[in-house]
Length: 149
Image (cartoon, rainbow, N blue to C red; front, side, top):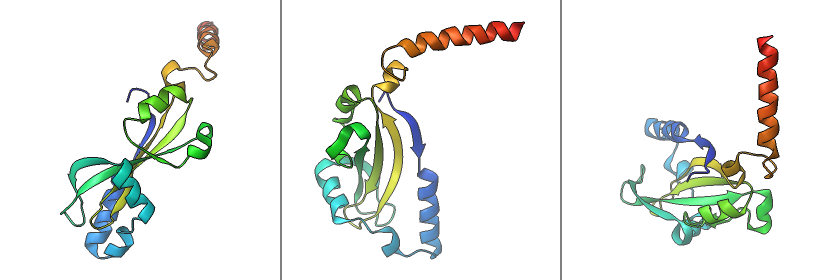
């Protein structure tokens, strides 16, 4: 998505959890604890992947996208399909997306990444009027001239 910004990737944390599991310091029941709500969200709103579950290796993982933001009001915290996100990104100023991978076989789940979406990332200005860009350009030019003196 072209408006994706402030992306946080949790792959190193996932590797650490899997390493702890393989070393025996963490049990399978500690990492395979998907709630019924998460499993239902994966069934009805999830995006299937071709990656196998790192625990049971018998099921493919499903990605669930949860959205949060002030403009969402009652819709905050809902799971949405990947196709709904660009439409929301063009209608809302800013909202947070959390991507969770889920195995429907063994209940493995882990936060994969989080990022911001919304109109604010398309225009580059804060208030949506475009005045921020003009004022910012004038201020940068003035600072450059002062630095040259």
